[in-house]
Length: 116
Length: 116
Image (cartoon, rainbow over all chains, first blue to last red; front, top):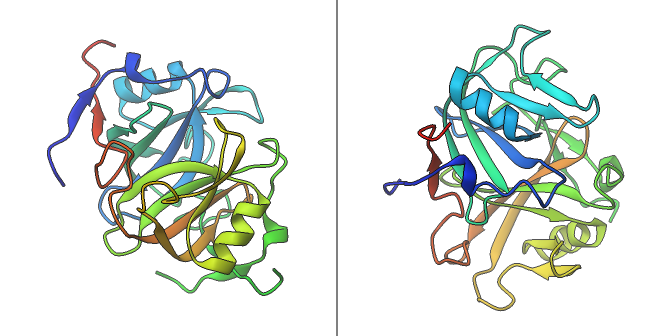
């Protein structure tokens, strides 16, 4: 990994998705992609400040602290920002299974071309 | 990595984002997350069929073969699907720098809390 440049929250572009940015969650130790979600400015700010993963739940239309009901919080070690500021990576240490179905990652299926 | 279940394109949920799913692109060898984009059904079908990464460009409102102008195609080895079918991972071998700014990944910046 080359040295990373710095970004601030003002470099994020929340306008493309109605106040949200895209969030990829990656296990910082294994590199595994664990889940995908969205965050608004408040979710990003609280994640930075508290070190736990906050998102914006589009279905519930509110701030969402991952683990608030399950206890499976994610410790966020760093947040990476992409070139156009509309996607970030939460680099995390998961404190339990990430998926609501109980698995380590939400990405447990491989897409087959059988029916294409 | 545990054995993956199979999904088909009918398991994808294109309805949440106006005909699109979220696409995380990950280097299959290093685990590095390279970029984030979107795909419509046609992009997924062509990716499966041709083995190169297709997306749907929201800014240009059309199908987008990554590399069609730069020559930096991405070979897609497998596509993983998440639990609710609205996000996928293209697991790729990049055939050149991924970012339009010339870097290996679009995620070259770390978010600093300095200004929060």
